[in-house]
Length: 145
Image (cartoon, rainbow, N blue to C red):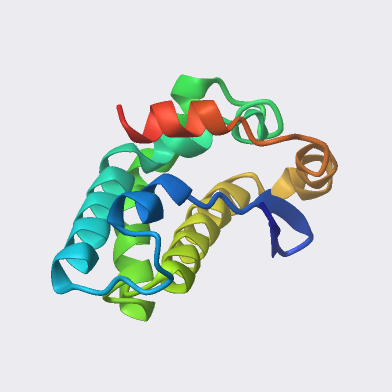
């Protein structure tokens, strides 16, 4: 896991190795079918459950001062537009690097939406987020809802 820096806020970059592992053990997705599986699956899951995935993390509840339900309500309207915005940069995910970049773009978009909404508390949020760890089990459960 490597951090993604947005403004001065540290957001953990979540890679989903199980998606890559399902497609192949290769760096590049060889067939169009592999590409389609990764693209369709990832994008549909993010559209449906992206807000849940982010809100399963303490940074998006405790640090932003929101309950899980409030967090999901705040972020859900942005999930489809953030997938679409990410698709503008990477229309087809062809390899692991593009998969990571697509997720990075999506998370940056979703995180920015949260930051804009809570802009008066940026310093407080920054301090809080820098100290938390990603709960990968919660991410997986949330994405597969």
